Length: 181
Image (cartoon, rainbow, N blue to C red; front, side, top):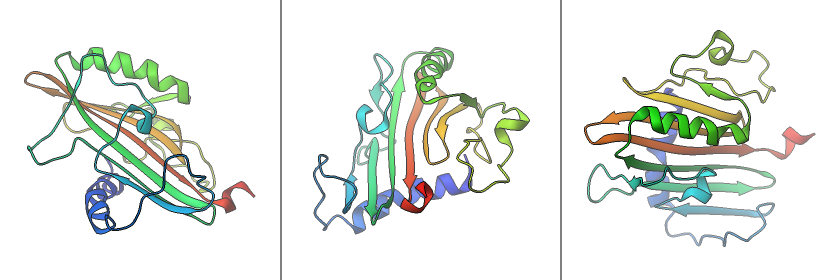
């Protein structure tokens, strides 16, 4: 995965801890105002993808959380990052087939494991919202799929594990009131 993506994932736990003293708005609140959403966990609704049947939440260490849900918005602009780590006894191939189908509801599914030149090329028009693989790539031996737009993307990263497969589901979105003009 790209350095920018890894950096964003690394900052999430720090941001959640640093901002934990602030009240969190209810999920029903209108996000046109201002607010913060933060949780040391995420679920399928936060990600926008179903969980693979029979899978379990994955923790690298007992004190780890299997997910994070963080959002910040105000003045018509904002971002959301939701990540969920899971594990399954099934093979990577089964999970890959399942998630390619599920990701297709957001548009073309990019296989960033073996991207075509069009999928990996950065878009020269910075204002374009077309999703590309860019510098994102899977960890060694894994696969990475993306779908959606640059401003509202869903990612699935799958890796082999001695007991089956580990996978991460990610929903990354950002918006700006100026983008709509």
